[in-house]
Length: 244
Image 1 (tube, rainbow, N blue to C red):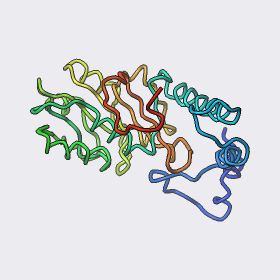
Image 2 (spheres, rainbow, N blue to C red; image 1 turned 90 degrees about the horizontal axis):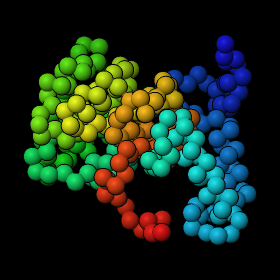
Image 3 (cartoon, helix red, strand yellow; image 1 turned 90 degrees about the vertical axis):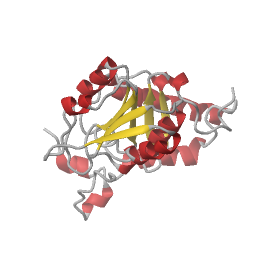
Image 4 (tube, one colour; image 1 turned 45 degrees about the vertical axis):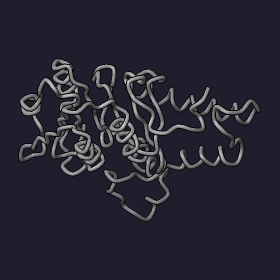
């Protein structure tokens, strides 16, 4: 049994408010705020680019966080990168795949704009897009998706839980269908990570993205992207941190 009052105490804003807009962003618990305070006040330095003790401490905390989220999602830490949010993760993947003229993407009408507009933009590069409509309850059946997969389908991109309907898609089965047809599969976990168990090893998707500021109870400006085959994605940005 959860001690609701004890949990509410971790979120000072809830002392005078009832907050229900968690599909947009959650409130940040005091533990996360204090962890950020510790960084800024005690050991702020560049991660991975310094030999002094503050830089090493920053790097240790950074990599510990990577291990923690990888363990939470049940995936290898080396396949997990931090992003600013899910939108950045989705664009990183959309712009990092080596698309060919005539490639095809299947997605759905229940997607957040962040998991729809990047694929729509690719039409300018000759990529074809099919948007599958849901049923009256916001669900998209595996059978409906499979009907639209072609030999040229390069990617199936589906949200795990809809931010508008709250409908939960069968991510495991969707990923299997995509694999069976030789397609990549991307799952937008913006509304699922932290709200429902996510097991990426079992799901066996090629890509998974989630922001930190929703179910993971992190601050704004944080996110995670899982990429099964990192070498298959061309980096979105180059510069500091890209050279070893």
